[in-house]
Amino acid sequence: MSKLWGGRFTKSAEEWVDEFGASIGFDKQLVFEDIQGSIAHVTMLAACEIVTEEEKNTIVAGLQTLKKKAEEGTLAYEVAQEDIHLNIEKQLIDEIGPLGGKLHTGRSRNDQVATDMHLYLYHETKTIMHAIRAMQESLIHKAQEHVETLIPGYTHLQRAQPVSFAHHLLAYFWMLERDYSRFEDSLKRVNVSPLGAGALAGTTFPIDRHLTAELLGFDGIYENSLDAVSDRDFILEFLSASSTLMMHLSRLCEEMIFWSSQECQFIELDDAFATGSSIMPQKKNPDMAELIRGKTGRVYGNLFSLLTTLKGLPLAYNKDMQEDKEGMFDTVVTVKGSLRIFSGMISSMSVKTEQMEAAVSQDFSNATELADYLATKGMPFREAHEVVGKLVLKAIQKNVYLLDLAMTDYTEASALFDEDIYEVLQPKTVVARRNSAGGTGFAQVEIAIEKAKELVNKG
Ligand code: ARG
Image 1 (cartoon, rainbow, N blue to C red):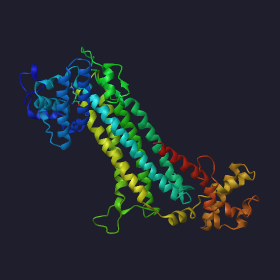
Image 2: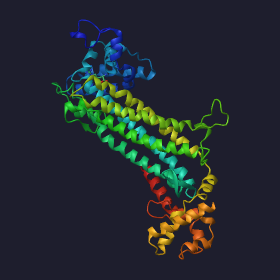
Image 3: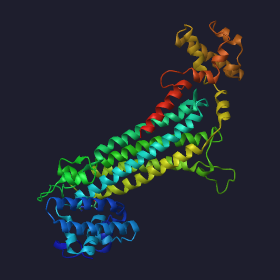
């Protein structure tokens, strides 16, 4: 099979060597970006009088034909043509004749592949940002239904203080908000054009890089041709933002798995997002949550893989860089899939309000409230902590909770206690009173919901 670069070669590689070096198996996903980049490039070549208007028209028409074939799925890719760029160029020449060979004037595959990936990642990052918004919306909807639903809040996975379930869900809203802004910020660096950097040093042709940048919707151009073809930071940033996002999702997965366990029974996942066991008929497994938790590892892996690939590379392009694509494609699929599953999983889960509320009234998570009570009445907090600690111990010994202790138990512990402690110790009161900014108090949660809604509506 003849190669487009075959001139200085006297023999061709064996098929299995070609296969090892080829990227067409995965970079064919860039076909539309590649054609889009080529149309912009040849349009610029004509505007700069490097090719004639007529030549440009024929080349663009040929590229449109290939695009149509790609849409119909009838474009045949050849491993012998190595990658998407050479495949398209070869097919263009087959389609319109030797004139197709003019397309590559003033361009290299090095600036071409970088351009394709910038275009691809811009588009996919936007899609992911939309998916983040959708998941945020499902969190808000669930939160709105559960402002006054109480769930144990934990530290060290020990019951700590009760919180509003809405407040707990909204914690993830804010994590996703930071994720959103990380992706949004990365777009500044994604939306820059490397096209026209040539192989590494620029070109002798009087090209107009600003024109191609404009035609492709980029905000500007890389200032340095070596940097333009060597930079993969924009992919690293994408993988890094994706890793952080997946880490957040994975933490929520862990909580949903815990909440849906027999031990908690705080939520029940919809049948559509759970699976059964092939042997144990009673099982309902939170597979989707486990899978997203598991897939987090591969996204981290993709980030580390690219960091490692790049660390020893001299400028400019090295074939090692072909390894930048599979992890990126894989991450796009994983992140989009995980966000989509999550939106559905959250909106369809049923929240077992009674189980949650039973849990918060059968623990000592109202102990802080009692210490705060004494402190409000003037006792130094440290001392109050000690007094309440003793009361907790007493209750444990009697095998009851704080609300079950007698008034005499309290007055013996401190003369500052009054009958109103029985109201103060109610879990609902405990939560309602945590009304500091950003706290779980119901009034604060209502404010947070409004803020959250404003953010997602902003776009
Ligand atoms: N398939 C190559 C890649 O993905 C395209 C760039 C090839 N450039 C080169 N000089 N071999 O990185």
